[in-house]
Length: 170
Image (tube, rainbow, N blue to C red):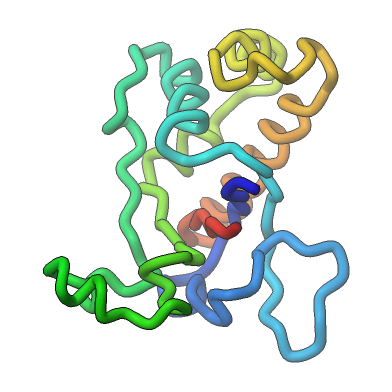
């Protein structure tokens, strides 16, 4: 089993961390659970795989610090600082097994929102060549669906002056 990633928009960090145990991209919302405008991006992490897309969109070399997320859950101020504190955490602590929620920078939101229709195919062709997509058949439409979903999410977030958050869970 691996980590799954959902990208969503929210008005602020407090709204983004509401009911953190629940995925953000769900087909059928459950009563009493917050609903989000979200994209289920499966295994597309913000640092490497999304970072490579951002590099292609900006026509810059990829680097690990291109997408500098900010941890909003679990709260960084409560994170264990020593090995003793880490070992004292209960087994169900979100610091051990998650989920986690990261805020993407505004420039990443704006880059995604600004991808023109005329570049979609070009970006997908570049993106599908990265090592992490070796198991994805080229041209199957999945990456185009993810890119257009993320672009739409970013455009809506930008229009509402919201940020994009990445929910990560097992």
